[in-house]
Length: 575
Image (tube, rainbow, N blue to C red):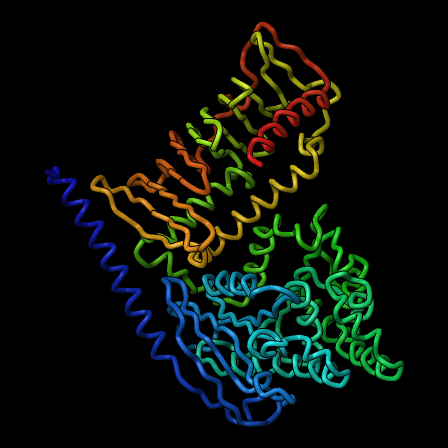
């Protein structure tokens, strides 16, 4: 039998869940009412022609509603399916019809299944920015069974497709400008790789574009297409053309090349409304092509050192943060996230909070005078072994940290960084790297690049899901259960045919994680959280080396190399 107070807490928890369900039902009904056909008068379109677009409600959450959108392409091609432009529109919850809020067009990458674009749209919509992506000519259902082969079956068709992509993007501006909660003066554009190149290009053709955020963008289309491995299909097509047709294609590429849009890009740059983030080791959009565009636009590049076109996922958290800040500059100061004003105990918010906390522990320095701390026990069953141990990890400001615990096949271990890096070894020995010490030097420079990159990509993946936890619903079902003591548990089960995985993540009444149970692909186990503190007051003594009669001051580099060797062993255990 429940204690009366427990029963009361349980009832209040059910009431909160019921109120949240009611709210989401209301939002869903309101969103479904928006489904339908919407005419645009000639004076509202870029080309002075009437058209209509259609909306069909897809899904609603406490932060946004999504819609399938279709509209006729301003340019007709010989293939009927290519003349209807499909896309998805993401509308933030609760925007008033005041025409004050910003919007963004997201242009997709060369290859892919539009998951990146959905992630960007969901992230922006969750921050009060209406977002929309559409499928370029001959992509997806526009190209039918043959897809891009149709586009490169004829040089004129290829040239027309490039013109059509520009016209379709301008039509997206028409659509967004018609929405009663979007300011026609606050419409921007963004995308990655091909999407970034197209984003820069459209600025020269569409004067209504107010902002442009380029992820892995660059100029000199001819060089990129004729040299990058990813564009070999287009390169082979161009090389087979007769010389006259080839020159016509190159002339069209020069026309839409971002390098030809200098005045428009410079106008945005002078206002701080043109931004580029590029990978320093990009093997597709070459760094010198990015630099060419930056010089034409008159802007600086935020370089991501050590990352290439595909390993840039390791920096996705940074990219998404900057993307949101960039477009939020046009958002009214009165805006508040629905998450701040609606019911608190919902699965997506708890998932995001947990992942954001994990990300803080792994990759974010606490505020000055604060620290992050996690203490846990783990028990992991492998097909041929069982790993048991404990971890106590503290992360302070200014690079201070301490990692202690019992590590399988290594035993007791303690490493840290206070005033200097230190390592506690066998026989109560402590090595302090105070000799030849240099400020800012860390152990990561001594870790094998392959292992370090794997770690960065894993952290980047966590960051991406933390920014848009709704993405998890594409891969698993998530249910939320309340406990009599006020706690909550999330049950996640894979919906992928070839992946068997179940995870149960439980939280205490104060929403700190208590336990994580998992069973996936022959692996099972548990993490039991004993302490989980994010931005708690710092305890300086935690980062000092342990007191010992057997303390030795050694070269800083030697200690860092020993710590790097230990970290490599831990990373190898997780491969």
